[in-house]
Amino acid sequence: MKSVGFLKTLGSVVAMVVACNVYAQASDAEASGAMAAPAASAKTAKKANSQLGRKVRGALAKAQGIDVSNIAVRARGGAVTLTGSVPDQGQIDKAGDVAKGVAGVTSVSNKLSVEQQ
Image: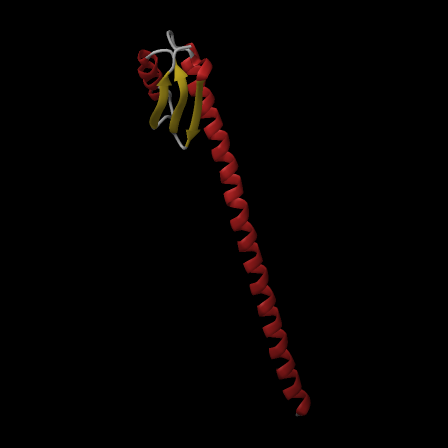
């Protein structure tokens, strides 16, 4: 009779240990999965931003009448920022229009300034 009670108690203890161990492994998997996803998406976003910046820079370089030698292009999530200087106001306006025309650009912040070169 004592051995039956002992086996019941031992079985309960084993069940608790297994349940706790399974819970701990599930929590570890969730934590590592949560850390891997943002790292992968951040890398993908950075690559997309770089590609969009290159596309805008290429479009500016192909456009007639824009001196791109002092223009920097930065892209973040479709928002493009143009910084630097150009010789005249007409180039500032044209650069903004060209950047808006590139596929994937959602907004343009034109921070170009006029500087005689």
